[in-house]
Image (cartoon, rainbow, N blue to C red):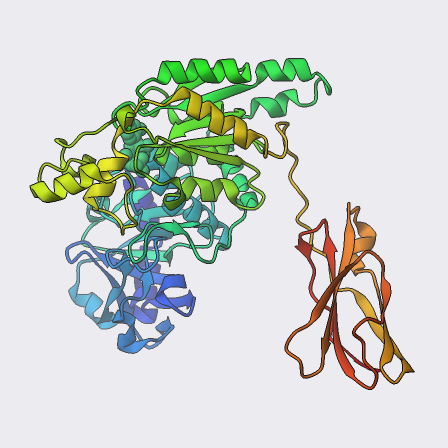
Length: 551
Ligand code: UDP
């Protein structure tokens, strides 16, 4: 660090002069604090006050210039969790002239990304809230490259997964507590503040019960690209990718190499009969079964294992985020303790079900109360309920289903989610066998095409009147421009016909490029006709400009 600072001192006077003359400059994207990322020149941080400082001068820029709306509630979210009141970012303002009376600033020469990690102790949060958003924020701004500096302002220590954060850039990330080592006033030459929320798929239940985000903007492709980049940084290569070029139809050999990973937890939410479960899996699928746990293996070695696995089996919990490293076509089996409804806790189901993620998700739930071990005497954060009133304890103990609840301290939820479970093997295998029937294919799945059709070209209509109550409407069009370059399994066209003034329409799916409609077509009537192309049943193209067809 001191080395880099001395490097910065080479241009110290230039930098200081620039700051004094031009002050801070800010330009942001986003209309709302929840979708905003700001880029700054000479954003400063005062470690004494623990505040960022914007220095005003004649050439300062502050866009958006919100006035005091900047505090309603904040300029932006510093973590990827939407509108969380402990994660807001703002700055104090001072005239640049006051620099004369302040401690000499230390300049940070690196392009810096300033953010809050949301919960760096929890692996799911590490990936979903921090690593993926930071990775794609850095993709969005090309000067946030491998030389970029990350600064984590949430105020926590490194945490157990700091090595993962180190993979994002070639430079060591800085923690808030380390900033004071740089002196009382430090100024970031160029910085970005905030994180992209485009990749997040889950909301944790702060304002409504937890569930998938309403408007997901990420597909399996982006998750897989991220996983691939991270694996490269960890020096992991998928075994299947090396072997793939070898034999082609050696089904027998391939089967031998397939294996199931059981991800076990060693301290809480245990599978009490793990050995029995492993035996059952091995026997049922005639595959090797390996166990991994965060306590026993390094993270890269776990990823190495998972990246070529056929199936991943685990209790509900943060370790299941590692399913993003599974190969396409793999199966994720999530186990839930007694009284916990799998439909209400779906971060991993949602991940597995993202379009193009190509994972098959199965949940199993313990329905036998005699197979659960509760821990009423543990501290409340591990699900203990001893601190509650007797009546409330009784109610929780007799309940067979945790009712919907908000995050994060619902005692009934914590009590149930921290139970240990004896997995009932027959019911477990039954669920697995039943569900595997609907699995598309057990073989390695190839990524499906996501190329959408263009608009159909030259749409036309011709009409004719047959009798006083019969008419014909012929619609024709040319194939979309991109189709001539593509091999598409199935090309269909959708035609919507609406009588002018009516608010319903008739939809038709057609294999050919023209069609004459005579049913329900009336003479001397104007019809509005929309045509679009569909590839492989679900890739919809845009509608061509509406046709006005008068019979
Ligand atoms: N954890 C673990 N082994 C355990 C219990 C927890 O490795 O026996 C990890 C877990 O993967 C997560 C963190 O510790 O990264 C916090 O676990 P917690 O049970 O609080 O959260 P959850 O897994 O329910 O998200």
